[in-house]
Length: 125
Image (tube, rainbow, N blue to C red; front, side, top):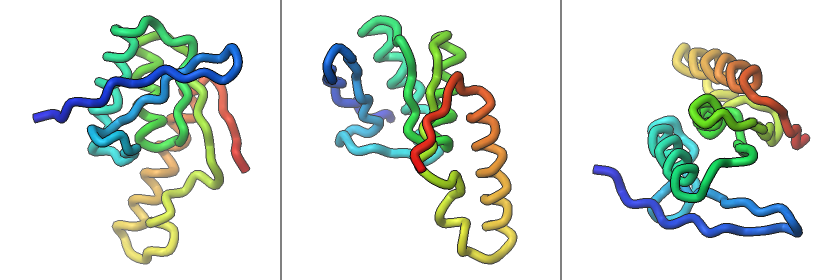
């Protein structure tokens, strides 16, 4: 059973209007891959109820960025992906072992995939 998402509230900065999308029922941000489907459904619902997007801004290259790539293809909307530093999963950096090595390799491939499918990048170094 899926939880009901809160209704997004439109915000503005000068003439720029945007709708920050809460991914979880309690309004907090959830950025792990298990919540990927929820992100895509919420983005599609918002596009249907509020009209088309001018652009999609994903605040990271992992699950949120991947959801942005899917929404970009489905909605034919430009995607900007923010890279808030070195794009390496922090938990996998200092953990030894084969599983951590696979996570690092998967993370690197995912970052490259999302970066290739974005229309623009925003580097926050």
